[in-house]
Length: 338
Image (cartoon, rainbow, N blue to C red):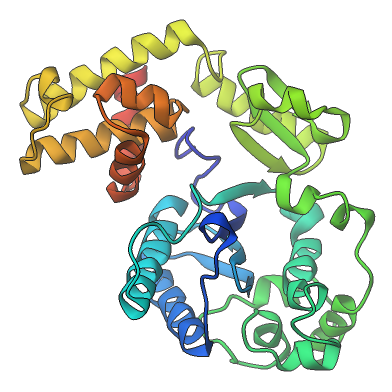
């Protein structure tokens, strides 16, 4: 397993969502969408991600994807940071374009692959951007025409979805188009596609069907869309990796010390340099590593991480976003935390 910061490993399937900050627009015209689609293609070639379904909405995006040779975080960071830089330069704006971290939900594909493809590709119809299925088929800012028309988006992975239907390729496409026009199950209405069916965290495993809003905080470190057997399997894998505790304050404190000591040794700087205002390249890189590890591996809040490193929440967030992990990062983390 690649890391505990997200339920991510090679060939894991995720439903990923990213929203504009304060629900702001992230695409103002078709040129913005063309640029984003082109960037998807480029990021796929660099990270080996496979995309099964996607939709560009005015203030958010949906993608159903399988990770490749690089972590999900690397693909998303390249994609979102690249678009934010393009957007800010074009419209002469500053600051964050996307709201907080993107949301990713681990998907049990044998149950939910086709259901999520349908849900994601019908987003423009549900939002009133298109009026009917004929318009949806011609709407270029989802993966729906990519599946319905041969080589419409060469970078889009189509075989995995179409091969769930029978017959020759023409038959499969017809069945797929018909499937899209069928009504979604109640799952679409209860928010499960966007929030998961199970939550994992400090308090264990929680079914969203059985939860109250006040309970969610202690469970929401990870999200899974799957059945109970699948959720328990993932929970057990994560728990074994974290030696029986998904979140424990004593273990967390000891882990923080080990992380800071490791960073100090690797970059040959005193631990106090991490909390200083120093901006040398080694200190900045060490601080980015520490921020990313505290937030995305230990699951600490921006506030708590900032207190440790003497940074503001914004400073921790920015340092975390600048850090680009690779799969060697996982080996390093295992050495630190075991």
